[in-house]
Amino acid sequence: MWNEEIALAKAKETAEVKLAEYHKLARKLKLIPVSAENACGHDFEIRTSTEYGPSTMVQCRTQIQQLLRKLITDVDEECSRLTDMKLSLEESIEQVNSNISDKANDLKQLREQIRRLDEQLEQDIQ
Image (tube, rainbow, N blue to C red; front, side, top):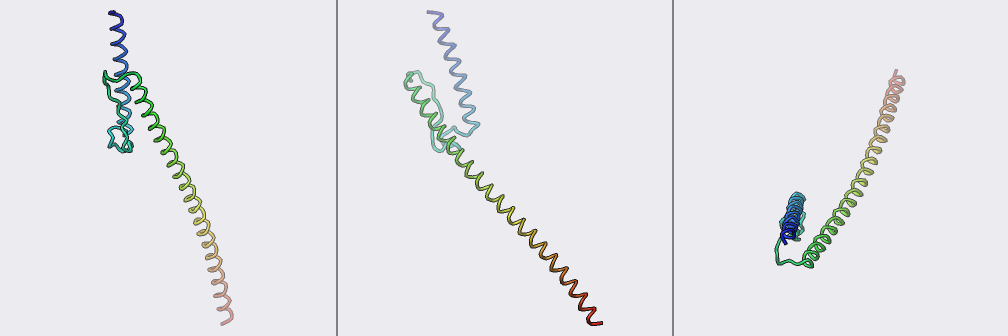
């Protein structure tokens, strides 16, 4: 009986440590409290209670895992969308830079043409 109580106390302590680590990480990721930036109105906090049975804990775990998976999917989609936007903007910048270079070359040629015409005009006047 005494060994069972010691084992139960150790298991409870281990669970409390893991729960504390989870809550610390959840706060760091801004998932706790419900009003936190990344919580999206969902409750990611796990409350300890002796009233919870194993099925309630499994249900709680499943619910949080589903919410986290959805959050990961949403973040992945947003990253993908932003990456596509970045690539599109980079292509636009490349095109604009190419156009600027082309126009700079055109301007250089026009200046050279004006210089030659000025020289020819000076010679014709003399």
